[in-house]
Image (tube, rainbow, N blue to C red; front, side, top):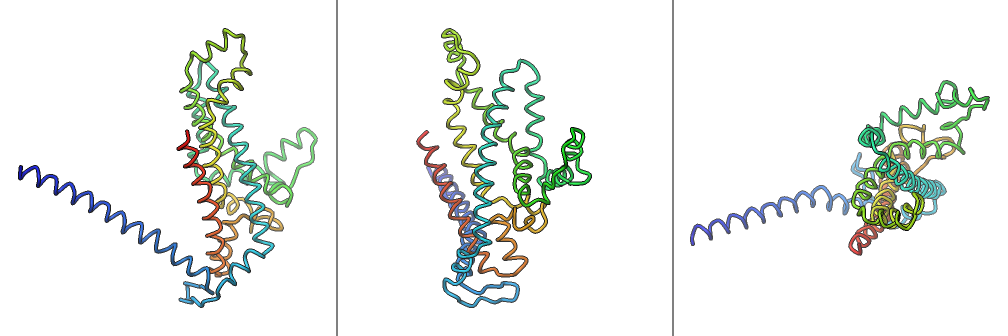
Length: 293
């Protein structure tokens, strides 16, 4: 009896010790920095020199009335909607096509998934070379067909779409893998019943596959939205100072400029909390949708 009580006590100590350690970790590296940043958003804040002078809501007025911030949010919204749409659409199309072939499934699955695990820095540099106006392979291909080359990343009308193309190419394999897993979970009896009724591939897709993959679509779409709202790496690597005339300026890139270029950490904290609240909303939506499923 004593041995059993001692074992129970040691288990409780281990559980509470683990919970305590996790609490300290999240407090030091998550909760305290968030509170500190929130306080800094109301101040003329520069931690480099220990400056933190209270300004009230001036930073919020400055950021929310800034044309640059408005441009960054519009760019972020456009980028998020477009890239998420194509990631979902191309992901499900690729998954259905790969699932329908009899051989080489593993080969195609691997080929399309490789960009996902590749470094975003390396991918971005490759696409910078592809989009190079003078020596880039894309303009060379266009020239072969007698089409005049485009400015791509140097053109303010094409810079953001160019970054979108590179991002879609890198991330579509992520959606494809999730959809392939979803397709494997669809009962073969549904396909057999559809074939008896004379359904073809298109009817099977819209009547069986698409409805049965709805939960997967929600997961891929919402995680995409959360990811692309925080998009930074591609803009930093592929465009110089957010492209011509802020063509590729995003919310996180503006945060970076405010904090680490202009040292206005108070303004940066305001942008950070705006991004945090948007991300939180979509995270809650995802959890609720998953719970309903």
